[in-house]
Structures are given as C-alpha cells and as structure tokens.
Image (cartoon, rainbow, N blue to C red; front, side):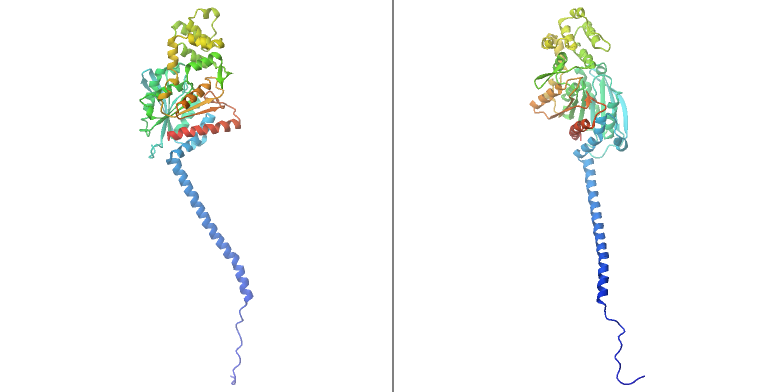
Length: 425
C-alpha cells in the first residue's frame, strides 16, 4: 500500500450521452404513435360496429313492428312477383311455408268456390303482423292460372293470407250482382282465419270481379271492416262500357280514339246484355259471340225484336254512329240489369280507400272506365288513387318487356302497392 495524498479516483462511469438518448426517443415515437393510432382505429371500429348494429336493430324493429316497415318489406319482396308474374326467389328462401286449401260455401246465388293460401308458421305475437286479402279474379275459371297462383303464393309467403273466390256464374262467363252476397260471406270467412280476428282486411279484384268487390265493400255487413279495394282493369258504368263497344272507340280528353275489344270481352258482354231477352233471341245472339260463332245474316237480324236487334248492333259494332239510338232501344229490363251491374251505383256507400289500376292499351275493358271511376271519386272527395300502366295486357304481365318499361311502370306499381299494404298493416 502507498501512503500519502490519495489519488483522484478514476472515473469509471461515462457522462450521459445526450445525442444517443434523443435518437432513442425519436426512434420510439413512431411506435408509440402507431400504437395510439391502432387504439383509436380499434375504438372507431368498435363504435362503428355498435352504430351499425343499432341501425340494424332499429331497421329490424321497424320492419317487423311498425306498419310502414312491414309494408315496405312486403312490397319489396312482392314487386318481382307482380311484374314478372312468377314467384320471386327471395320469397322462396326467406318467406313462410304455405299451405293451399280449397273449400266451398253457400251464398244466396249458389256455391262459392274458395282457394286459401296461408302461412303455416305460428301466428305472430305482434298485433296486425299478419293480414289478409280476398281476391276476385273475374270471369272464367282462373284457378289454374300460373300468375294468379304465384301471386297468392307470394302474398302468403310474405305473411298475408290470400283467399281467392269464384262462383258458378263467373265460371260460365257471366256476371250477376247477386254474387256480391258470396263475396261478403267469403270476406267474413277470411276474417276468421288465424291471426286475422278483429282486423280490417283488403279486397283485390280484376276485370269483371271489380263490380262485385265494390258491391260487397258497400254492404253494411262488412263495409267498416274493409281496409281497401284494389280494382285492376275493371269498369265503372256498364252502359258506358257497352257504348264504347258499339262505337269501337273511347272518348279521351274530348276526342274519340279508336278502340277494338277482344272476342272474349264480346262473349262476356253478350251474356250480360242478353240476360233479360227472350230465350230464343238470347241463344241466337250469344251463339254469334261464342268461340266459332258466325255473324247473323241480314234476314236473321230482321227477325229479331227491336231490343234484341239494338243489342246485337251494339255488340257487333256495325252502327257506330247510332250507338245512342241503339242504347235507347234496349228494353227497360236490360237497362235495369246494366245499372245493377255498375259500380257507379254504390260508390257513395263505400268507405274504404279505392285504388284503381288500368293498362292504357287494355283491349278487354276500356281504360276510360277507370278514369271515369277516379273522376267520380274525386268529386265525392273519396280517398283513392289511379295509376295507368303499359306493361300489362289487361291484367296479365306482358312478356319481353324492356328495362325502361319495367323501371317506369315498376316504380308506379311499387308506390301503389306500398300504400295498399300499409293500409293492410
């Protein structure tokens, strides 16, 4: 050991290196910022997911609970069926399973034949989540028509019990005001289907089914329970429809426009206008307009009574300038029958909103009839809507439609269908 003054201890720890520390901090900052950004992104993602979930829950609530929501969903699902006349794929996958049953009831005018398409799922707990509609297809046997079956199937898959009806009179290509009792009874039976008790239900009618739906909607037994009447391709006044047939023209905005009825319409109108004529004249005239019939000779026409001759001339369209004269020559019993078959006589007694739909080029019944119907409802301040289309052939969807036609008429069809289903919801 050495004695004396102690030596300065040597520094064994180096002074802090400021430059090195700063570089380390700077290197760490991007990692910290990245971590903070990651946390912010995670919080944003979680928040966005919660918002989306809330929106979806609200949409689901609205679509299942609120009437406008149910109507919107049903319209969206049903529109392809209405435009294409076929059952849409989404409904096949998402819709309720459907049961089809057939039954009959007795009315004042005979047997009523019913086809019922109903969901087989349990009745929803929500009030008015299930609704119903009575469908009147018109004259002839439409029970095997694919478009009608697809419509009924689609309605049932969307939660709407669809019941369509016909009668012996309609099956024989005739129309009788007395059949309205059958419509009332069918409506009452529909009202007792599972989930429909106490609800206001709708009626949808096509062509010659329109007057029967109107008569039933005005009937005190059910008129307060009718939610709406949707009338497609019908008529308003039987006499004015026959006048159009006689002229082979319709009055549009004050001008006559050529219009030529199809043979099937003439067959049905011949059954209607001759119903009160003597049997031999009735048979002779109806035979002309039945499939394969031939016009009467001048000698055969001369042997008809004045009333029967007037009816024949109106139907055959051979005297367009004498329509008023021939209408006046019809027997009083025929005029009474035509008035009895006109919806115009009951519109003041109907309380439900009325939706009128008609194809502008309809050759079965003139579209001007629905225009006249709408004008009368306007004068009465009765809630209604009127829409003209170009994509239908009478009440059936045309084939080979282009995109512009589908988009144009499809939007109008969506609008009126939504309003109808909102009333039903």
